[in-house]
View (tube, rainbow, N blue to C red):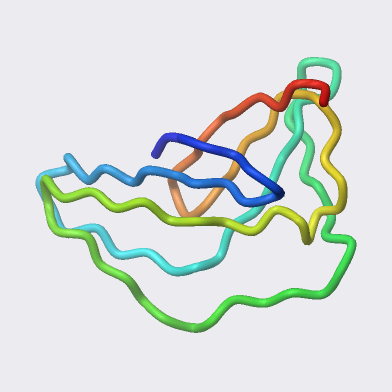
Length: 96
């Protein structure tokens, strides 16, 4: 999984399945920020939830998913990591 674009609180993430198996995943995700060299979970500033659906990605296929990070508030410059299931995508936000 790799972060490919961030714009107006929306993070585009490429999920590329090269596992040899079909990959199943849902819409849930979490956000962490690196603080003093340690990853810390960020709390949402507004209530949100995920639809209870299961998506599948066949072996050798890829897809781009969009994740709304505005539920975590106004993100400051720094290093972040989107976490979903057993996948992680690190990205950095620069000062605006």
